Length: 306
Image 1 (cartoon, rainbow, N blue to C red):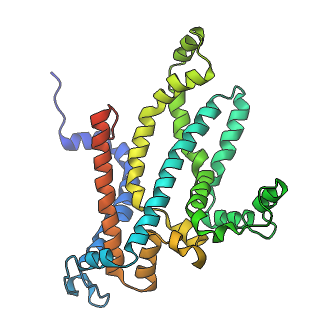
Image 2: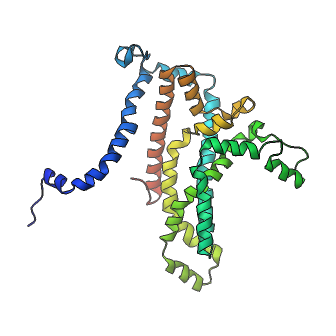
Image 3: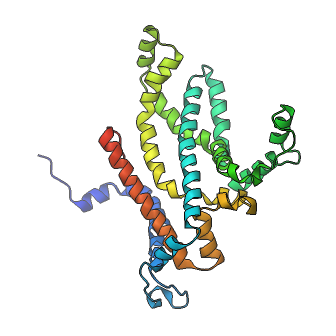
């Protein structure tokens, strides 16, 4: 009968693995858990000179103030619209790209395309915003020149000043930037599908489209569900960079989101408790969304996070 080792003995046996894990634990503790202490200022009339313990407790005052602000409906509309487009496009296009890439017979060509496609992920959004501004510029921008040469438009359009196009421009730019990177995990999921399924389908007379529809897509469905669940907490996170860098006064009614509001009231106006209250409320909604989505996925299918 094997003798069960004590905890100190198991720790001593796994000391090298624990040493390798230690930097990651320290990183998460310092940058993910320690800052949570600062979220308490949402419940205090925080004064940096007095500190948290010396500031008066005000309860939910700043939460109520944010919910009653005149800009609340506008901020929520823009945030939900941009986030929903990012989640939908950030799922559909990487899946389609992964499926199409998997259908390429030339392996070398597949690798080249895949490498080129995920390179934009490593480009700073500041650079991406400048590239987008140059391409969409009415003064010799490539997009306007192509549309004029095709006869689609008669004169250049300054796309970045078209308020109703702002949501779709942000979604399109995010697709270009993240599609290749997001497709990596779907490509990995496709490679795990049993090749005999494709061979059997080919013998039965199934064409390429039917193989994709009945084998490839069902094969990566668990991955799609899990990644969608993980993306739902970001429904109230439209992204600060796109709205801040591409926004301007002419599209402010469509570009202002919760992220830019937190920046405005927190850093520009110095109202730290209000900014913390907005951030904490957004985190609470994200937690509720991921728990609800996971419970729904577990109820209707066998795939869930936990």
